[in-house]
Length: 336
Image (tube, rainbow, N blue to C red):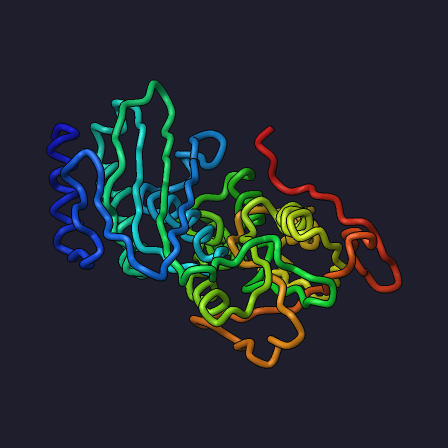
């Protein structure tokens, strides 16, 4: 079909899901039209996924890629303590990809995740690319006026928490780089299940939307960021904006149990993966002492762990490992 036929088909799929009253016009015009709501702030995030840099076509599947394209932006909205509402996704693909079922499968994965959080696809663009796939994902969210959680609100004495576990996505990426693929494995390998789960941790991340809403709406977090570039780098981003330091307790880092079990036999260091590996898409946040008693233990089945304490800026960003105290350098992902 032509791109116009495909857009009409995609429009039918989105309209079948229903539109909230705030959406005055969705797909079908040059721009979507949203009704502004009194007492609400708009939160907007954009992310790029570029083939060869952010993903390998031979290591993923279209549905997984569609899921991840939306998940990375949902994670940003969660890190602001906001509720995701709308998505715009643009896709540039080579002609041979258009001739396959790639695009239809991509949007099945994307819309499947969108349905989980009642996010509506309201636009985007579709274009031909010379050789590689590029994806631009924009998500629009909302929160009560003044309630957005910034990176700049942490204070000395606050407690540092992280949701879920760390290192799983980075381990999955290392396995992909060594030839592992989803659904392809040696049946006699006792680690098959763990390997497949780590691959999915990287290829199909779970954004912590529920935690973001609780932390934002209940005003529990004083500062927050999602772990996309790696704990070490994202912690530096938060500390720089808040002008604070941190003592991180290495023994309390919630390293994914599958990482600890597999990595020793594959010459990978679980602690380094947890500290510097990216794309866990967990939430890293500070909580004041007076808010500790109001913190839930789990949200949507996902727990949290206290991993450190916010200190004055003069104390730097350091890791406590037994009797040893060392400076933590930002060694996560960098594009340039």
